[in-house]
Amino acid sequence: MVANLTTPLIGVVSTIAIGRLGDATLLGGVAITSVVFDCLFWLFSFLRNSTLAFTAQALGAGETQEIRALLVRGIVIAGLIGSGLIALQLPLGMILLDAMGGSEGVTRAARAYFAIRIWSAPIVLANFVVLGWLIGQARAKLALAIQLVINVINMVVTLALVIGLNAGIEGAAIAAVVAETVGLVLGVVVARTISHQPLNVPRAVLLERAKLWRMLSVNRDIMIRTAALITTFLFFTAQGARAGDVVLAANAVLNNFLLISAFFLDGLANAAQQLCGQATGARDRAAFSDAVRLVLSWGFGFAIAVAIIFALFGPWLIRTMTTSGDVQQTAQDYLWFVVASPLLAVFAFGYDGIFIGATWAREMRNLMILSLLCFLGAWYALRGLSNTGLWIAFLVHYAARGGLQALRYRANLRASFGPVAVPVLS
Image (cartoon, rainbow, N blue to C red; front, side, top):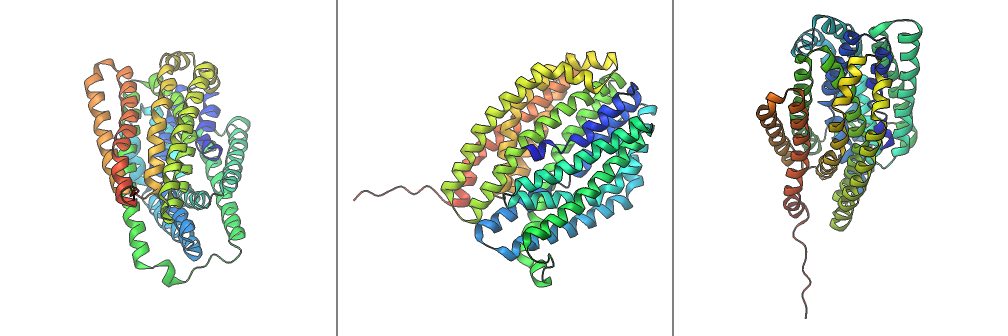
């Protein structure tokens, strides 16, 4: 959970640093690009999720060589995808930033940030693989250490460039690239050390058709599922942008609360992926069911704690993130939606981890598409309420994600492990 909690800090630190300048246009530019990059990279989060699940399953099945192969496969795929994003940066930037609907000043600031940070794409995606690989082996402390290094470097360089050297929004983007690069170098060194042997894997093992095809199939379904989820967040941000720069900036501040909550609760999803994946690899139904109960029960307890923290410290955090009085007031008007969100989100994240760990990717894909339709339907019905209706629809999306997966869980459990054996009395 702590390792995941550090993940959104790049966007949070950039928001705080730029927000201290008191310019809603620059803050809006950071808001748009932070969401764009979160969503763009998030689209390929299957690299982390599938690596984590397959590594945990290989660990449970005792396949030592396959564990190393999963890391190398993932990094190669990450490099190819990231290089493709760099090659397509001009059309990507034009399409994504124009689609966000920000004002001319906001879009101009966003383009400056985008043009620099896009160069971190292969590095960020490779870091996804390393993080998933470590957590898949239950080495969360090492994953935490790497994430902390990335974010400490990002904080220091961002403050130095944006506040100290007045480098503006470009300085925040440069800091992100530097931090991710250092993190990848450290991650590869750690992976080589804990493997106790070179990371090179025989070509026959690396390209084994059955395992490669299964990985690509699961990755495809997780990517489609993530695309549906990203559509929700992009639509949310775009509707906020169309409501004006102040609403956009206020939603951006509150979005940082959502990201902190999401990545915090997603730590439970990562635990579920590792435990359920290892139980799946070992074909241990009892361990799988125990993991599910623990994740959901502990998750709800943590969700209550997060909601209380947001309720108590939300106004102070808003004032810390921006000095604009209009943005502060608007953000506080919608704070209660953020307070309620963890109580609904916890089941969505918990079941996400369970489904990914068991590689129930196809069902997860289909249910996420249904959740997106629920969100759009709720927004359409409540569109007359403007930003309030948008926030209500967002909470409906959280509820639909968790509820639909909960309804499907028992059928998937029977399909994977068979029906529960009933003792025969003699």
